[in-house]
Image 1 (cartoon, one colour):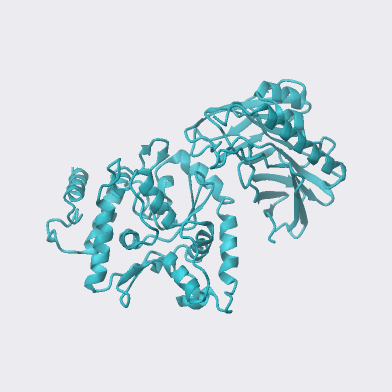
Image 2 (image 1 turned 90 degrees about the vertical axis):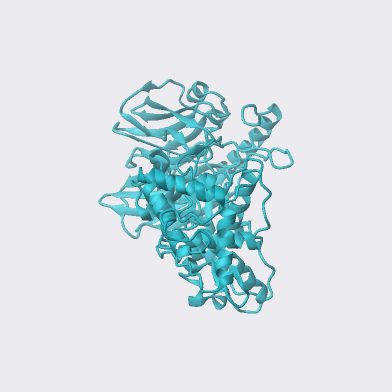
Length: 103
Length: 288
Length: 159
């Protein structure tokens, strides 16, 4: 199955800009389905980005982050061709990870 | 003064149900079907009403008319919410049917870069054929069950086909065939006819009031409205096809929606696409 | 409606689910090289109001600062997807958080900013209704905030 994680990491000068989009329902636990039943909370809690064995960004998310969450940040020190490891875990313990190349 | 005159003519056209030859009303006889003159007048109406909007920008719907919303959209487009659907569509498009054939075998140019030519008038059948319909016919011809016209699979496929056609201007042809002209005319009549408990026509919102808010939402101009299809709507938390959009348009005005890909909807799509000829395909799109 | 009042039993369910995730963390699914404060701040995410969430998250209060640049729309086109970003000229930034004051749980996101990472984040948040969005930047151990009201006409809670 295709990864749930889409990443674009581009270096410009000494800064690498990272954008990620993740396929996840991010159910808040406050919404009812068509039958009136609460859809249980189901959301990503932690998302990490690692470069060169170092965490460059750690997101802690609650249920208020939008469906198919998106995040953008930048860090110093990446180079073209470097690996960027991305990893998430949700409140049900599910995880996914991927490795992207910085371009 | 001039703009006001055009607007009044447009209203007259709506009420009377006659040709909306706004600019050309003086020269065209009211009961002659003249799509070329219609399209010219239709486009002129919008460019006159919104002189600050660049022609190509009409395909961006409400975002062409509201600065604050445009900023939110540009932010979203950095990593658009239709991305997953687009990828799924690309994959499905390339996956062979049970008999080994693919979608590419059903379409000219292998199905790539052809969105701008749909719908077309099939002279053998004597009817309008939309892209969604052609996709399901392709499936059935190859022994596969058709997709729902309002669900994700169809949206993914059309998203991919639109994506490969981005930037190509709508090039809808109306052959010199009385049945084609009639189909166009029927679509146009459907577009301007009021219906439902709210007594709205398609034009009430998308010709008279684009850029205005209806409750919380900013209305999109009819010009270019199909160029961005299919769309990811935040309101739906998902993708929608042209069929889904037409069905919800009807139900939102409390009219009875038709069956997706009924003759009326096919004709409506034919009309609405034809009058947007020249505007580039921009789908898949993101909308509130 | 479903938006404002989470039921007590649902909270217990959430709590249960949360501990599962923490157990997962304990087994090291997240790389051990993460920053020191890499624990998921469960308690802060469970607070209702923004003041309580800030207290649970940092144990102190924030002062408003024009060095925190919060970028959010005047009117959210849809409360389900509101693009919100923050950037700052402050130095020695270690974290950035976003709170939506009238959401059922105010804390939306808490980002750990290690050294060498630019103190700027863009994300997309859900908003239940018109209210304040608060961004907090933690710089040299102090908290600085920026607040902006975002009007929500179509709520992001669905249901």
